[in-house]
Length: 200
Length: 200
Image (cartoon, rainbow over all chains, first blue to last red; front, top):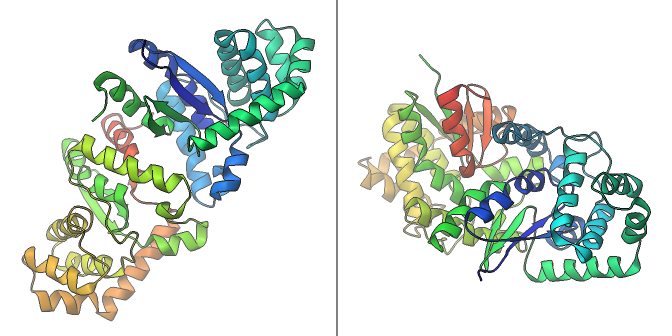
């Protein structure tokens, strides 16, 4: 059985959101599955000296325009959130918690969290807002809230972050296909071609 | 007559090199011309806090792999130069000098300079090497060397850099199509679609 595509993303990453709307269909077309890995880019940026796009002169302004333009091209609802970027521990922990019982349903939750933030301007840095989203997805709200505060879940996310950094994940979205890394929503065409051809 | 596409590039930018091999064909397909503008990203990075890709942990290593992979996909000769990145004043000034007499021939010179650096590992930060490349392109070597050292040419490049920064050019390659900015070789597909559709 071919290995899963690893999809790393930060919930505060607009390009991660855009990619999240496309990766499952691309993988399915080539008989692959996708493992979704929420990461906290803040921890990675401490290593790489990276800074949030929005804070960079000229580049931040351009990027806001580019994000919206990419979203329109893909037909994906997008509005730069009024609070951006945000800490994404709550959303990442909730996703890790949800994955423990059902990975497929956890992807739906992650997609819903992304949509809440980038299409509906809900502040998913707030655990209560995350719990609200989980309730809409059919989770028990109180259980979700307890889950994202669970020490075991926090430890698991920390461990996964360490693994991601070992695998040299430095941005969002980041894909690993059969050992080959791809960074950026604009590399999804390369991901697809790699899946179709086995590489070049 | 439709306006020209503005193409901004730094001679030390691998993605600028890749884009330079594609932009003329894309423009021609849509009845457009291209104005080539060499820029010095070092000056821009002072404003934006940008740093050369190669110096960024993890991202630099990934980028080297991505550049080579993109080049193979495009069928473009590419080898990361042994000296990278480099100051590009000499190549930029030579191009600005050449443009004064013949803009079309200056593009061929710019393409040859890019090829010398990224396919043949010639150190085009060296004015003598730039002059050698110009001689292969049919320029008088001594005139080219004098041209790239000319104060008027230096002033003209400085003025054009100021204009580029006013137009918010922060990276390479950077395109402006009918007022719409596009950054990155990976936005050439968007450039092409913009030309075909007038925007979205």
